[in-house]
Image (cartoon, rainbow, N blue to C red; front, side, top):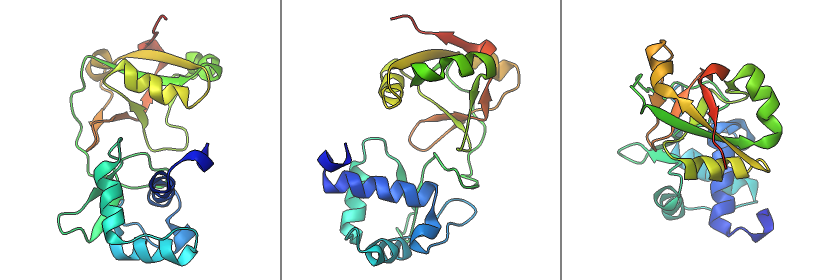
Amino acid sequence: MSRSQDPLTRLSKFISLILRHHPEAIGIVIDEHGWADTQELLDGINATGKHRISLPVLEEIVRTDSKQRYSFSEDRRKIRANQGHSIPVDLELSPKMPPAVLYHGTGLKYVPSIERQGLLHMRRLYVHLSRDIDTAVAVGQRHGTCFVYRVDAAQMARDGLLFYESVNHVWLTEHVPARYLHPIDG
C-alpha cells in the first residue's frame, strides 16, 4: 500500500508518527500540550535523509489533509497533531455535550473483545468516535472486514462520562462501556 501512495501522503503519515507517537525518532520534543517547534520538525525530518520537506510543503500538508490531522499555532512557529496521541499530552480540550448518537468503526475480528470490554483507548489517549456512519466505515475498513457500532452518547453523557471534540471534529472519550454499544445492521 505505501508504495502506491503519493509522496505527500507518505510524508504526512511520517509527520503523524512523529507528532503523535515518536518525536524522539527525529530528535524533537513535544511540549505538554502536544506542540512541536515547526522549524525543529522540518530540520529533524530533513536530517533523516528519508524525506525532504520545507515550510511551504508542510503548510500544504496541513491545509490539504483530508482528516485535518494537524494544527499550526497562529504564528505558525508551532505545530501539533489534533488527536490520536499515544504519548501523554493535554490538548486543552474542554468537556462538551456530544450529539445523541456517535459511531465507531472497527474490524470484525475485534468484536468479541469489544462485546466483553467495551471500546478501550488502547495505546491512544482516547477512544475516537465519529458523527456519521460513512466515517466510521472508512476507519473500520482499515482493520479488515468492517463492523460499525452506534454509540448511545447521550446516555453516556447523562451517566457522567465525559466527551471532548477535537479541532477536526473527532469525538473523544476515555472508554465506551459495552452497554452503550449497538451493532449497525448491514
